[in-house]
Image 1: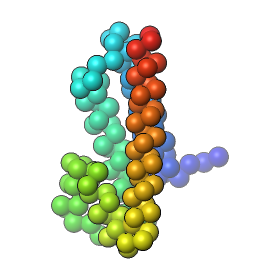
Image 2 (image 1 turned 90 degrees about the vertical axis):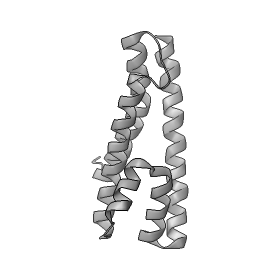
Image 3 (image 1 turned 120 degrees about the vertical axis):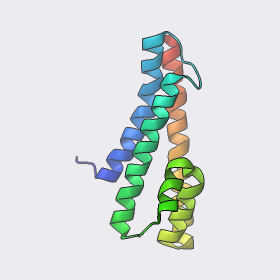
Length: 121
């Protein structure tokens, strides 16, 4: 089974959420909130979210301005719902926003699982 590039970005986001805390626990002996590993995971996660956004923009032939692009990097939780509504219309944009909230919940759950595994190491 071959993943699309957008699905690959989301799968990698989930992988980072799970494996990052595990590596931190293995490497440092503890899982520390707001530490160096957390910062690195945030940078990688934002990069993956922006990659997904860029692929989606291209797929929909949506011309986003610089403010939207920076917004997705700096404030993804605010900018992505705006992007979804502007690129898909109200109904489909709200559905996409709910899917994004589900993906956020899954990544937070994977992160919590990774922290528990990392703390056990």
